[in-house]
Each structure stands twice: as structure tokens, then as C-alpha cells.
Length: 221
Ligand code: CA
Image 1 (tube, rainbow, N blue to C red):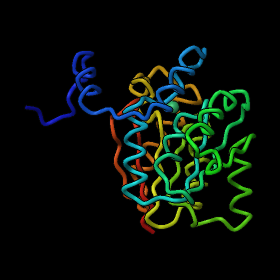
Image 2 (image 1 turned 30 degrees about the vertical axis):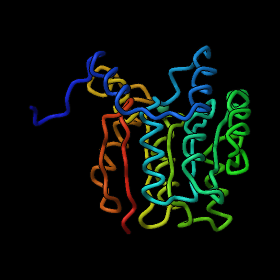
Image 3 (image 1 turned 45 degrees about the vertical axis):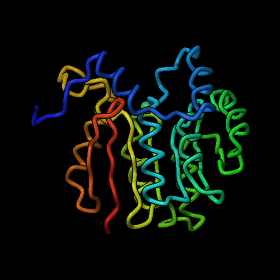
Image 4 (image 1 turned 90 degrees about the vertical axis):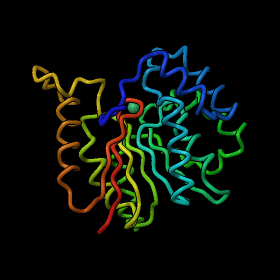
């Protein structure tokens, strides 16, 4: 028994996956297709994808935003959990990443739910606001370049409706946040955003130690 989050040993992690992972075959194949990629560690863990599908269904989310699509595993997770008229704006700067995932989006029958926007996400999100899409999204997943995390959060908080949820990946940043000798832009940005969400009265929040840490913020005003 413990009053704190249990340490995840390799054996317990294997058990955890064995007893709880329900990964659709198409997602497993996309995960395999990404494994050989030199930046494969940027992909979310399968249990995190499952949690996000659970969250999307719990919320009944139909309109979502993703920042940092990489090879498309998290986008496919979100799109699969949404209804037929679901809509996901997927922002990715490097088109070559998304070409790995797109065949799997089509195979899963959800490619028409994913509106891929190649380019810098700050510009994409600003254009969405200028087009009058503020307060219209149910869910946003932030997993792009870390130095822009504060900007992404500020923009997503304008794009999601009251009651909408923003999920921010890598909120525990492989434990680097507690190393006070580290002050690189990415580490500093994650520390800054974590602390500002803790103190942000506009949201309910909870930081889950799943994957590399998933910060959840629910807009309340
Ligand atoms: Ca990530």
C-alpha cells in the first residue's frame, strides 16, 4: 500500500500492459512502422493513446486539435475515438513524418476526419482564431516543439470551449525538470508552463504520470 504513485518497474509495466492494453491492430501496425524511425521515441506510448481514446469518448469530443503529429499515432488514436463526423486539425511542421502515418489513417477509415496542416503550428492556430473558430473545439493535444509550449497553451485555451480539455505531453520531461543545472529553452518552457497551469484559475487541472507525463487542463471560464 502506498499514499504516492507507485514506481513502475519493468515487471509491473509488463503486467500493466498485459492486463489493460487494448490497442487496435491498425495502431499496433503504425507503432511498428514508426519503430525504425530515428526519432521513434517522440511517439506516445500505447497506454497513453488508449487513455486519450478513453478521454475523447468520455467527453463525447467531436472537434479536436493536435500540435505535433509526428508519424500520426496520436492523431489516429484521437480520430478513431471520435464519431463519424469527428474533426481533427493535425499540425505538423515536417511533412515527411506524416507520410508514414497517412496510409494507416486511410486503412482505418478515418483519414477524412483528419485535417493535416503542414507548417508552423503557431501560425495555423492564429489563423484558426482569425477565422472565428475560437471556443469551438472540445479537445487539444499539445506535443510540438517544447519552446513554444506556452504559446500553444495560450492559443488552445482560446480555441477550446468552456469544458474543453487541453492535454500537454512530456510534462515530466524524462525527469529533467528536477535537474537545476538544466536551463535549455525546452526544459525551461515545460517548467514555466507546468507552474503557470498550476496557478491558472481559468482551468481545472491534473498532471498524470502516464507516458512522459500528461498535463490535463479543463477550461472552466
Ligand atoms: Ca511527446
